[in-house]
Image (cartoon, rainbow, N blue to C red):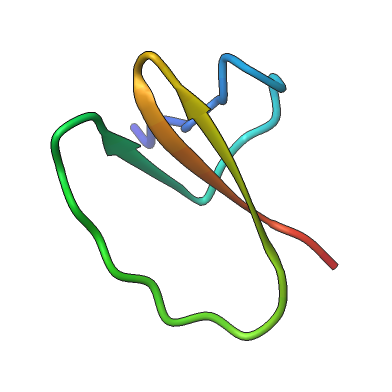
Length: 47
């Protein structure tokens, strides 16, 4: 079963969730909206 990365800040599914204290790198074309919460960062693709 797939889990979803629902952002607690904006309640929209994120394509990536990075918990606090972890690092990540993304390679993307286009814009990315990032919500930062007490739970970590949530990355949303925009069109």
